[in-house]
Image (cartoon, rainbow, N blue to C red; front, side):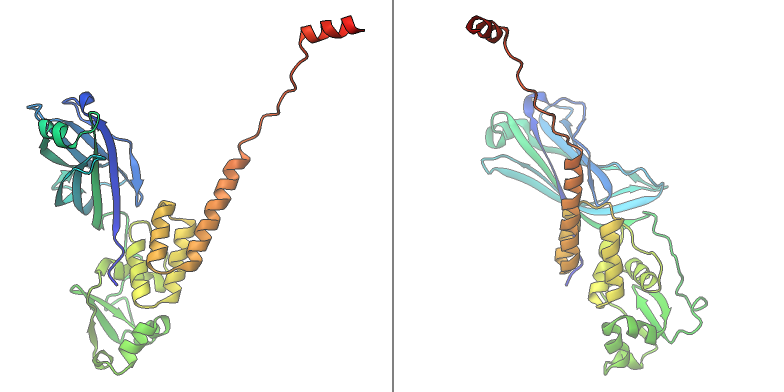
Length: 307
């Protein structure tokens, strides 16, 4: 099963008559703990619509997010124009790209004729996060030749070597038990190449099963993917605990991850947690007592006349 895809969509309805040459930002939205928004403006020639995606992350100096972007202009009547491209948002010593734009996208004349409805169009951007670097993921434990005294197997991931113990891996994972002690050729090899595995995620995975608090909002999907691939109950449980207690992902993002890896218990706990939060919010809403209507002076006069 391929790794869980970090994907979200930004959308905004714009009034063509209100667009100026000055870029205007849409409302900021957090996705996978990173703030994002879109911006749009008229081209210098005033003939086309320009809009783009902005990454507003500012909590570290060196970072990079590799993405696939799909820009889209559409209307409710079904007419759509789009562009797909791969771009990296980054803030490094060499480069700083915090936004990517679809410049000179479509002429206003064409938009008004074929796309706009009542002078309005909807702009969208699908963002697929391919890789995130520099988001506070530091090594908590080393798996090199000098740090691991009793290693008897070397796992090679994308050219990176991880020195480990077969028995420990086998106790943690039925996958490694069969791979390293079964009838596969790897059982007789001192070096085993792991294919279709990201080395950063594998580093965090090994740290996690060795007792470190190695998961965060940046790598949780990658670590959970390996925990599921290697059938590692301890790692899966610790990922569930992180998502339930510490993660700042939205409820929808967490539920998609739970559904992806068939984590039924986590799904139930997330739903119960959501219900409890709603109850707490309702407690803060105090119903105002309804005042009894005061008797009208006319009513008093009529009462006196009767008496």
